[in-house]
Picture (cartoon, rainbow, N blue to C red):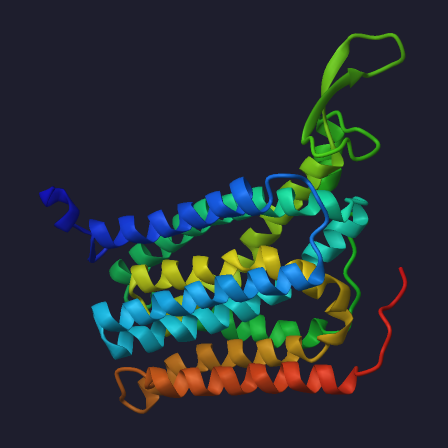
Length: 326
């Protein structure tokens, strides 16, 4: 069993194995026990399950503190908060995708479940590439910081602008090169049906599959923001990946509670843009002040304060507002 103590990305293999075991167990519990049957998930259940995932993520942070020290735990927690907040922004896009494809709520959980599987793999690849870049290219962190500042400024300019799936080039490409059914066919991603009356049954993708593809693509786009954000907080691949995945795991559950209230989080985007600019700017600021890095505890305090203010202001300004009708 000596191989378990062998280092992989600066951490013993047993630490990676422990993390992956927890994730696999959580996914098995979710799909095999809690949501074995297709059904609509209520708001209360969604909040309870999201709270459970957040508790697991925070408990893992406690284990990080015991195993790696307080500074590592603060970096993990900061990354967890930032990634969870950026994941909340995904809810806006996911809700738009499900609405566009007319996916009933009872089938949305399965799409999100398989979506999270894709996220785990895609983020592993992107974080692995990011870690290699940081270790081998001296200016990589400055590049990531510039991306964050640019993204934060761009986000400020796009607040309030309506997003739509109409005219999406990828969606148009898929529909031109795949046979797609006109409506959702239960919980199936693919079905066989005749292309024309009386013809031979052929394999067709369903809108459920297209929704899954678009959600995965959306995550890749969001990862362009979130991966540089977490590397600007810590360059430890273990902390980067674990905080990333634990933050995203609860999104699937929290989606069902937030989807009906996304109109109430208008100021969240402003807060996220400020956080991204701050995280990127502190890399340049630390260099200008001759510091190795801005203290992680200070970064956590600023991040939590800005995001808390954005969410609190959003809920206060929109109190009593009804959900917009589409």
